[in-house]
Amino acid sequence: MLEIICTACGAETLLKREPIYEGFTKSGEALTCVSCGHLYASESEVPVKTEHKIEVFTEADRPDRVEIFDEDEKQRVCRYCQHYIVNPFAQRCDLHHRFVDATDYCSDFSKKGQPSN
Image 1 (tube, rainbow, N blue to C red):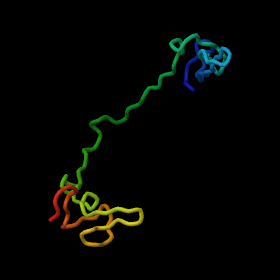
Image 2 (cartoon, rainbow, N blue to C red):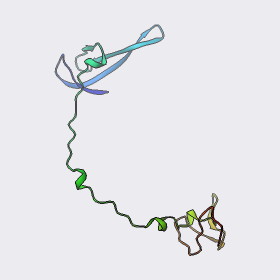
Image 3 (spheres, rainbow, N blue to C red):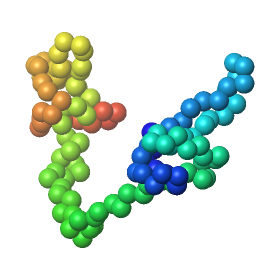
């Protein structure tokens, strides 16, 4: 439903859309005021209620983007290592033969697709 200011009754109300059928085929839509039932001929005649968006803050008020990790630090986690193995029950390191998490760090990191050390 769309909020409108009806031209017939002047109320702030809703626009009701009802399908118009010719037999079993939809031929159009009837656009009516929910309050008084005024019928609008087309979509362009409907007086849509516009909302004024209040902007309290501007782009200058936004904080600077904080970068916690360098780019190379983001990529050195186990998730991106070629020895990282995932199955439905556990995440393992194939190099050290132990359980790991995707966000763990390792000194023996080697990126996927590169030859191992």
